[in-house]
Amino acid sequence: MEKYIIGNLKMNLLTQAERNHYLSSFSSELKKSKFPNSKIVLCPPCLHMEKFVGILQGAGVEIGAQNIFPEERGSFTGEISPLMVKNFGGKYTIVGHSERRRYFDETNAVANEKIKLALGSGLRPIYCIGETEDERRRDLTFDVIAGQLEEGLAGIANTQADKLVIAYEPIWAVGTDAVPTSDEVMEVKILIRKILSELYSPEMAERIPILYGGSVKSRTALEVCVEPGMDGVLVGRESLIPIEFLKIANIIDKAQ
Ligand code: PGA
Image 1 (cartoon, rainbow, N blue to C red):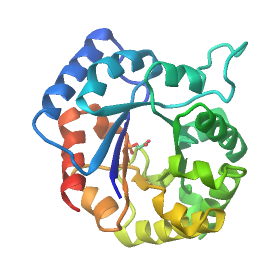
Image 2 (image 1 turned 30 degrees about the vertical axis):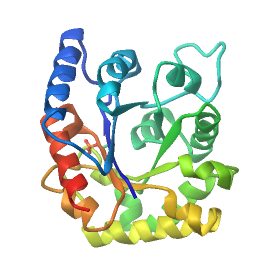
Image 3 (image 1 turned 60 degrees about the vertical axis):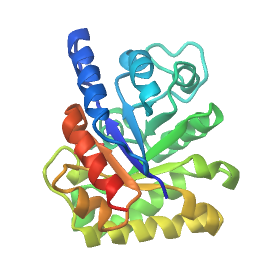
Image 4 (image 1 turned 90 degrees about the vertical axis):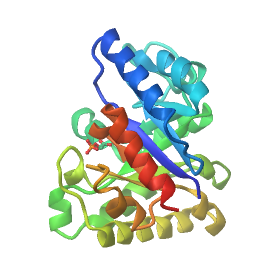
C-alpha cells in the first residue's frame, strides 16, 4: 500500500512572513527528493489553506484541514464546513484528534457526524484514535480503540470505507517524547485491522491505511512506523520543520 506522511501544523505559523518562510523552505526541500511510494499531506490552519494549495499542490503535496463542522453551510458562527475545505482545494480533514477530544469535547459520536459529512463532501477523513496514559495503565487500550472505531465509524458504508484513513495516536505519546515500542504499535495495528474487517469486507479492510502518530521524529520513524508495518505517520511538531518532516518521509518512503 502507498504510504501516507501527514503533517498536522496545529495552531502555528502566526504571521504571513512565517507562513511564507515555511512554504519556501518546504518547496525547496521538496525538490531534493522524490517520494514515489508515498502521499505527502499537510494540514495547516484553515486561514493558510488557500496559499498552501496554491504553492504546494502543483508540487504533489495534498492539503487538508485540521477540523471541520458537520454541517454544509449556515448559521454556525466561527465554523468551517467540509464543503468549504473541498472548494478551496483541500482533500483531507483530521477528525477526532485528541486535542479536539480534550479541549472541545469531541466525542466518538461527534467524530462520527464529522466523518459522515466529510465523506459526503468528498474529503478523506483522517480519524484519530488512541488511549490515555491512565487507560493504558489499566489495560484498557483494546477496549478504548474498539469503542472509538465502532462508534466513530457507525453507519459508514463499505463503499465509502476506502476513503478512510485511521491514525493510531496514543494520547500519552502526543506532544511528549514518549513512544510505544514497535511491538506495542503492531499489536494495536492488528486489532484495528481486525475491527475494520468486522465492520467492512476483508478486502476493504486491507485497503484502509492505518498510520501511527505521537512524537514521530526521524530517529523514531523506523521503530514506530516501518518495523510495525504501519501505512504511514501523522506528525505534529516535526512537521513545522520542513527538513525534518521530509527526512521522516524519506525514511518511510525508501523503507519499502
Ligand atoms: P506530535 O503530535 O508529533 O507533536 O507528538 C502528533 C499529533 O498531534 O498528531
